[in-house]
Image 1 (cartoon, one colour):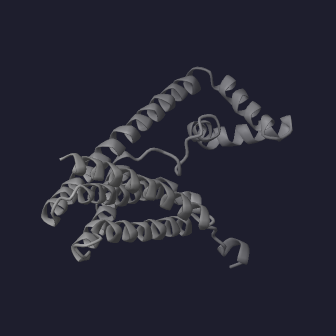
Image 2 (image 1 turned 180 degrees about the vertical axis):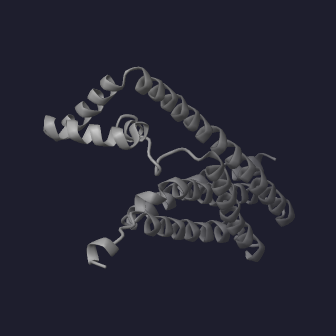
Length: 233
């Protein structure tokens, strides 16, 4: 077998569907739970109450992520299905105009008219709906909405991310609990940014810096609120 026939390229963009949901879920799990723990701890609450609040935040957050992802991605799926149904009707009612439309798309992408017409005719003969879905509507196997996959991925990764600050809370000393949990969570976020960049084939420093920055900002704000309300109480 020749090298060209055996060579199979694997592109990072093929992971974009589940990777987005996974990074979003894990990041939210770490940030929201760590911020909750730091904020409640800053108010002077005892460790047991903080642990209960963190555990409740884990469960509530995981369910919220699952529901939110399912609803939002389902809306995308509904839109895709409506567009595909409309395109199916147009192909049945006026196939010549649809083929001309596809030809014009390829001309605008740089093909000369004759070649664009040949490409449109061949792709239409093979699978007209798939050709229009990909080149006219921008719907492909990579980008198509998968509500259940997104919901399960987000819920699972949120729970895993939220468990990390809780583990840090269990081993943190009574004095400086907020600093221990906050510092550990910053490290967890940096690791998440690194792993996300590696999985997506991107440069490392930018994903790491942005998740660390926004995570630290969230924890600082909630710590300030906890100290404020703790002092008032």
